[in-house]
Image (cartoon, rainbow over all chains, first blue to last red; front, side, top):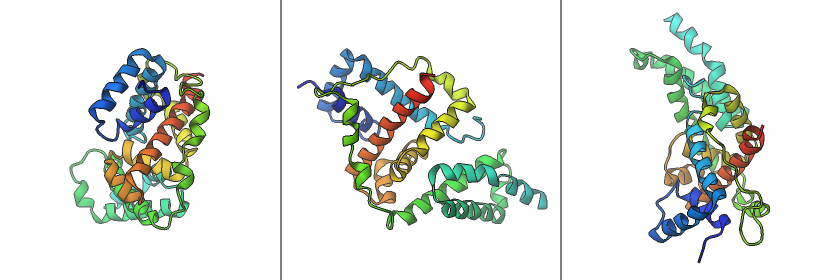
Length: 61
Length: 182
């Protein structure tokens, strides 16, 4: 029942592009609660989004 | 009048660089920038009162880039190689755990203030396969919804998610190796 890191990496990515189902969100949260690597991964994706939004920003650099 | 023309022309190098991030074909880049400059000169009135010429020009260019991506979607090469993510298998062990867990990047926001960081990011982007990179930039830079991206690229929504997943996996790996571990 427990998601693997591999599955979590996919779901965490899709969560940025579509609304995850309730079951998906619950299982994602359960896994993240006990997995440092996946928590880091999710933070990294959020950071990537921020960074890429600023790419070529005329005022940013 | 002439002053405006030379100011617009002066932004050409910046716009070329910007377009190159998203279109890798030299001719497509030149066409998009040329169209942008022509549109800007024809629409000078639209600029009146705005403070930043570069921001205004970049806004026009974004539309030209999406047009170019759309135009190329049909005759683009097959993306089968880009939607197969089995090459990520090596990142996980047999039980699906990270072979090497993603690291704590500390306070990554500090990187956002650094020019060199963006140079590293651009380098990582340039290593992505074309459609993967375009899907990712349409999503994360242009802020398009997945359904729009699928349409522009002419792929299914499942393929779209895979392209975005592939991009994120590759970029985080690349940045971790080339920036955050240095």
